[in-house]
Image (cartoon, rainbow, N blue to C red):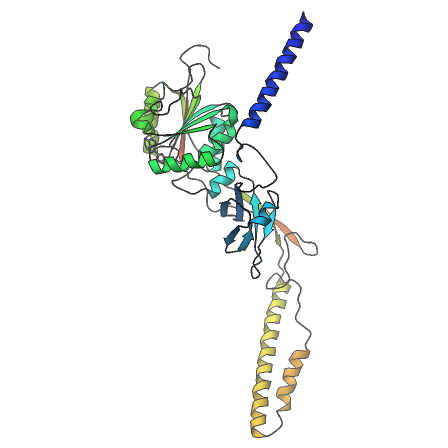
Length: 390
Ligand SMILES: C[S@@+](CC[C@H](N)C(=O)[O-])C[C@H]1O[C@@H](n2cnc3c(N)ncnc32)[C@H](O)[C@@H]1O
């Protein structure tokens, strides 16, 4: 009997696996959900120009990407793998870019800003506090530039759902287009509507049963009363409200308390990136040698000019040029060529961090500016109306 049960279970598992594989094959590919090493025609590629400048591009045959670091041929990008360094094809510019695979983290650095956005330090903290994981159903308002929407979509995956609301029509349309272009339509449902006035079910067209709610709105306290009807009935629902000022936090807390949300807590994420690298030890002797180089160059230049002027004058007067002046110029030329090796105090051969033959010390520095829209995060949870909580 047990053997029979085991055999039936095995058959069921195989059928389930095949169904899942079939489902995956028929599903739309998304660069935010599916990883690939090769770059296909019109794929989304994030071109990393500098630390503060990442641009989204879609390479197509014979196209080019023009930057102040040079032009980059799309054919070269299409023949490369994600992660590659691409040199400029311009004859006069020697710059390069890196072509990176999209991720919500990189997208938040390169997306077209339509509003303030949620950056990765906040996004990752919020996602883990709301216990968002594959399969979670989330309500988000407003969509804004859809920065956090991408992070949510990647975390909940194809078995989850993100209902995102935006009342500003052009912003809603741009977000909806982006979500479709990024192959996220099966995960994210963008809706155009005012959640403070009309709630979440209105105009969404789907039955909502979210266990996580994220509100990045100027007046979350007006949206909170609409939540009870659209959150999960059989498990705990967690909420995070993202507000830049304390008055908003107070009003949010009042609204949460009124609707029996529990464990209300306010947190601020102050994330600072630390950088560690090697710095070349610069000795005073090197500085002195550099000053000597400058003086030698200046004297040689002066002597040459004096000799040229003297030669012209002598020729005009029909006499021999002054021997002392000519000798001084010749003397400068015969001085050993200036050192071409690297001098940490001046110009010279290009050295890469950590190269052998030089003295290095380990240094670290903290990022001066925070690349995050510092806001107060108010968290709470709502138990399910029934007793069989998760
Ligand atoms: C700061 S932005 C959200 C940014 C978003 N979290 C991101 O990471 O890109 C706030 C958005 O909420 C929208 N909004 C404000 N009040 C709203 C309401 N009552 N209903 C729907 N959207 C609203 C605004 O139009 C704005 O686009």
